[in-house]
Length: 292
Image (cartoon, rainbow, N blue to C red):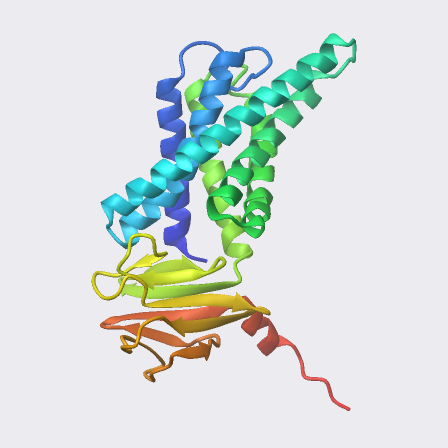
């Protein structure tokens, strides 16, 4: 478990909750059918802020790139805000149409589907942001219990007593925790950079991972070519691919242009070192060998 990632995710949720609470005005901010305008705006801002902060805070802490963090925040905020707003409007129209047709639906069921909707909308935002169905499913597994279980608790406690600030804070912290748990438990490959004092920066390998001096790269370096190397995945194996003629990066002290990575491999870039880890490699090592 990477406690720094857990801390960053929880702080992102806390800030998203606090800022959303400052934006909202009067009425229940989590009741789309009863308080449409306020709830629509509040939930959209909350989801947009959470996705933007999760994406940008990690960059600020690990790379200290303000411009890159700002670009990631703006992109994530706009995408998740738009998807949440659109989905909420469609949900409201469908539910009002069903209710107007005389269908009797209990309030508990409506609340269940409302919290589930937020989980799906936010997960779709992350999936669209990273262009990955795998990330959509991964985040959905973390957001669904966070929204449904905590949402039910919020309905029965904070919203009854009109403690809206506590509802924002509690929901944000739990959402950040659920996000971090899902990414940690379902990770397949990652790079760890040890900074001393018990601090480890973790870069998750989701899809194609790039490193170079460009802000478009997943790992931005201080100098060197715009794209120094790529790490791609093929048949559950991560491949290291150098993108320049000069060997500025090495694996286990040796120069490679193309190499299949193994759990524990050390990637050196100047004075920086990254340890590659793979869940698949660890599973294979732990499996007993068959005997004839």
